[in-house]
Amino acid sequence: MSFDSVRAVVGTFGFIYKEGKWLSQYNKAKASVDIGKAEIKPAGDRWVRHKVISLKGTGSISGYKVTDELLQEVGVVAHSDKPSMRTELIFKLDDPEAFGAERIRLQNVMFDKIDLANWEHSKEIEEEWPFTFEGYELLDPIEES
Image (tube, rainbow, N blue to C red; front, side):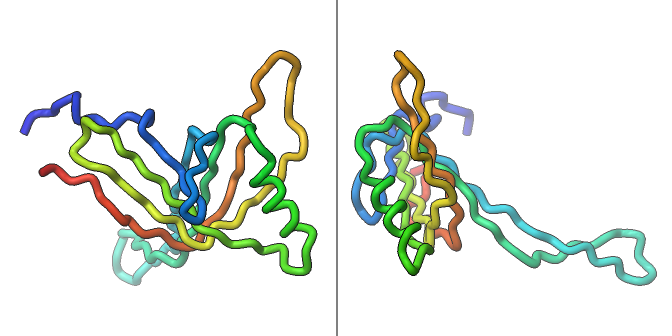
């Protein structure tokens, strides 16, 4: 099959959900898994082999500052006796011209940083929330029909 540019997925149709609630002000999402490997050097073989020993999920969401809802939620937890708030995020791409919608669920999301102030005169305020996560699930893959 030849490449059909109409089917290329565009981020314009990306959505971020936290605990089922659409975070409409956030327009950028990133998540990746770093694969930690150990080098195994067997006797009598010149090839260095590799064994997966760890997985580390990191990412961020960013967009426009509209409310302090996330700041209040993460900030309150940071000041409590149990500062390890865990939540889930679902990233959805639903380009109407693509082969379908993709949904990825990130598990045990923990935010890394709380920005209390980050603004400049005459500029819209954008905020970024970096996080780690411990597991993911591909809920809906994009597949050619």
